[in-house]
Image 1 (tube, rainbow, N blue to C red):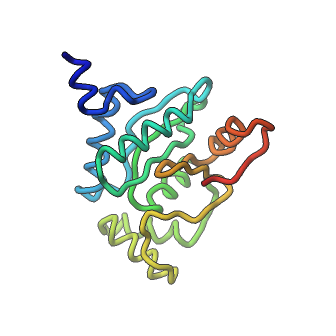
Image 2 (cartoon, one colour):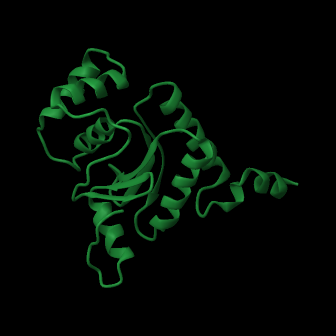
Length: 180
């Protein structure tokens, strides 16, 4: 009976996420999409032996099943040898987390802008609009500029030192290739 329910929901098609992790992912996606939470970490895995392609597949599947406009991230965790993953809506939120965890150096002008927004209690959307107006850029539609420490597969982005690792694992000759 349980297998029929899982199959009807499409949950048995996940490669590594459990039903519990899928449920946590859906809650996190709703917080971000509907409650203006800028970023949510939902889990982690040891880097050694992690099937990143399966994790990417599952996170993309979570987003597809939710129907919401969010992105997923995978990045090195503060605990050495582990990665964490979750969801976000605004680029500045991921950059803030990368900066605070030491995966991205600074200081950049945008760091000052999101820090000010948080200190003054602005909503995540208001911070995003302020950063874009201060930089003269157009409003983000969840498209991120390509950068050297990013590997992207559909709506999942892998950051920092993990991006290089995943690129190497996915390329037979060990060289990095561009993200799609």
